[in-house]
Image (cartoon, rainbow over all chains, first blue to last red; front, side, top):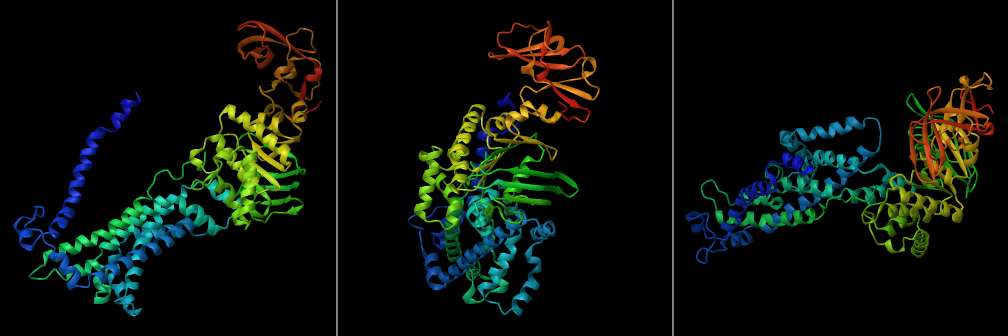
Length: 282
Length: 336
């Protein structure tokens, strides 16, 4: 009986699910595969047969050469990484503390504050671009990385707080009370008990936060387009012209841009261990 | 070491009163058990002593110091939770040492204290395991160990055995009892299980609906319950309650007669006689429980020897001596 009902709920069965996931994986990875394989080809080969893998004849590193020598790509990289790391650190710290306060402490306006923060999830931050630009100009922060970091933190906070809040609600009350009986200060409870227990959630929201920040073109374009503060996404644009696009360079820089985010993703995904709270209670 | 005094302690959530002015005096080194049905306020009362729950009115003293406004960590208590509440990302050693490391106690002393507690509780081999790798009984012992290392004045136990299986419960119960004999700290222990209360306690406090029904030694409660609630709650199987109207020789102010199942004997010559028809017989080996319906349609349980050959459907006569009867007036108060 148990087996029968199990089958009913999953009409596709294990293999069907695997096939669908595999098909989706091909669909998702195909553009990335094209970018990477074409980045190692000569310009002619890219246009002659975009689907082909680089062969001995068509292999060329000219794109990487251009990117690394004829533009300040290392600077763009450093900018992007600085922005991403700073945004992540600030967002995760502030959001987890806010989520802890909202979920643990009862104070007047708790629910209202939670709703106010959640509204940010529904309103796209780009709607406020004009006012953000005005604000950044009057703060004198145009063409600085600080401007971007501030905007990205603001953009990421609502969803991060919302998700972490839900997770922190699930931490058994007894754990916090046991710690309070042990004489542990509220800060230590937060940093040494709550944070380690919410690590999988923090890793998840970390990835959610990081990807749009790394890929964003809009805010670097309007807030910090200067040569010194260009990000990778903005830097790539210099190879895209109105009449001629240097595809070798574009594809090479995109290939390079994948690397750091892959590294960060690997770091976070290692934290996504399930059932870390098992054994806490009962 | 410390005594605990509760004076007119009340607790309410909004308009709902859950503890109605409770006065309790627990002596230094005493093993005191709060017992009562679920929802009677016993856990709330314990959490108020621990400082995890605010007191609406009244005073709590631990070691003659008023602790109403002190945080849990400054009350000299250590609490063992029903769910154990072990820190899942720390191993057994760190779980026990965590509270100490915060108090700025030297590493050597922490190690020594944890090892001593681990020895008492036979946790030596498990010190480097995470809670997830322990069985329920082992987790329970770690939770107790975490309380022991802090060397508190008072141990607070919140239904510590309710997540264990029956065999382990009996074993751990005995371990807790031995522990108390060795350490001699004051203990406040909450349970809904009257067997745990009877076996462990120096003093039992029976709670019902936020009121203290009776305070006394286990056998006092068993032999002389002050009211119907305590009479029905303490003892297993439950005490039989009979209407005195159909029996002669009772005062008019007696509203209920109570007889414990084990005091009913198969005899026609006792002071008090019940006749009835057997509905069911439970044979446990050492004892047989006879379920019968008496002449006035009351359900009665009698505990007889395991060798009794009473059968279902049979008419039987049971009797009890008058010194074994518990008499209660119309308000449920004891009157003999």
